[in-house]
Structures are given as structure tokens and as C-alpha cells.
Length: 314
Image 1 (tube, rainbow, N blue to C red):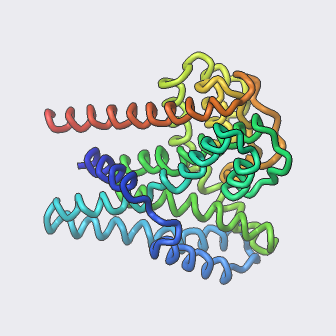
Image 2 (cartoon, rainbow, N blue to C red):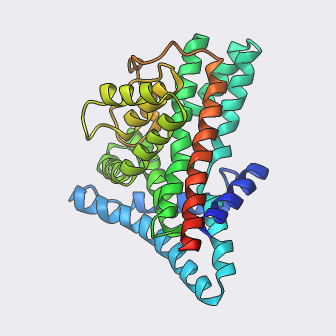
């Protein structure tokens, strides 16, 4: 049931991408914002943990409870619920259109348009940015986004928590971003942002490394492992650093260097030096990145299919 839930959700997402302003996203934002405003910085660590749990637990427990009730009624209802949850937690099409539009603009030698789209997507200053830097930022953000919106969701959906795990991952990732943005405006919320980032770092630790391994397998395996080993020097290094190092080696492209923060894709906007493995990024490498992403997707779907068949036969 798990394999077909993911497969059908992916097909549905490709046919009709979910809007960023859908009712579920608006409700989550309202919930997270309400909890954030009620946060008291006194006793920051304990209160940050309670605030984080006050957002994450209701969503994950509610989804798990609905699944349990539907499964006891009939497995078909639980199957439909799984598809719906995966569809709402995936977000492949929510960022892929930016990537595609930048690729088209660069192919048409429209640097101005490519800068505008990259700025809309990432918020970074793209003024006077050359094509190679546009390609490098685009590839770096695409590597991280593909993991956050696809492969990380896959992992937490496959663990025993099922749909509740997928929701746990997505809500945790969302809080790490939303509260980090708030902390830049109001330092009162900085402890909340730090806890959300640390929590997501832990939740994303294993999925990030499995995604990096997938990139290595379907890309240039030797260079990916070399970059992973030499660019990520500390075991507790940012999950993003692992993904970027493996992505650089797999693609043969010098992406952004290891980032300093454990959770937010926004750290890629800093002036980190490029990873030493690979060649200077070019617009042509964007097509290679698309192929890498789809091969990684097919790899994990095939592994899941084999696991599903083994369970059926066993």
C-alpha cells in the first residue's frame, strides 16, 4: 500500500500541483504564528520545546489517528488517506517551476529574466549576477529543495509512523523556516527559531544522508563520496553541507560550500566559497540536475517496490 500511495500521489502532484496558499498551508501558518506570538522568552529552552510540540504534535497525532480509524473501517479508506497526506506533504512542483523558468531564460540568453526568477525564488540579491553564478545558486537550491520536498518526506512516510511521520517532517521543516524568518525581525523569537532548527536538524539527519547516498549512486559515485568525505569535515556538520557535497560530486559541478546553519535553505544566500570538486557551473548543468533528480527518484521507488514485493511474498 505504501508504494502505490507514493506513486499515485506523485502522479497526482505532477498532474495538478498544490498551491502554496491552499487551506491546509494557511491553517498551519495560522497555528504556527499563533503559538509564536504566545511564546515567552523567559525560560527559553523549555518554552521553545513546548511551543514546538504545541504545533507539531497536534498535526502528527491527528493524521495518525485518522489513519488508524479509517484502517479499522476498511483499508481502502486508509489507502486514500495515505495518498492525500503524501500529496499535501510533497512539494516537487512548488519549486520545480522556478528551476524550469530559470533554465529556459538562460537557454534563451535572457540573463535579466533569470536573475528576476532566482530573486523571486530565493530572495537573494541577484543584481549583476553572471550566468555561472545564477546556475550555481539554482543548482544548490534545487539540490536542497528536492530533498526537503521529496526524499525527506519519503523517508518519514516509510518509517512505522506512516502518514504521521510525513506530517512530522513537513511541519518541522516549515517551523524551522517560518520561525527563523521571524527571528530576523524580532530577536525575542530567536530562542524559538534556534530550537526549531535544532529539532529539524535531528529529524533530517538520517534522511539527508540517504538522499546524498542516492545522489552518489545515480551520479558520479566516486566524486560524490570524495566531496562528501573532504568537504564535510565534522560529523555534526549541517545536513545541507552533506547534500551539497554529494550533489557537487554527483553532478561534477561546484555548488555552494558547506552552510553554517542546520536547517534553513536561506543560508545558501551567504557568500560561502564553492565546493572544490567538479567544474564551474554552467547553464547546461541544469539539465543534468533534472536527470539526477529523476534517477534518484526512480532508484528509491524501485527499492520500495522490491521491498513491497518481498513483503507480499513473505
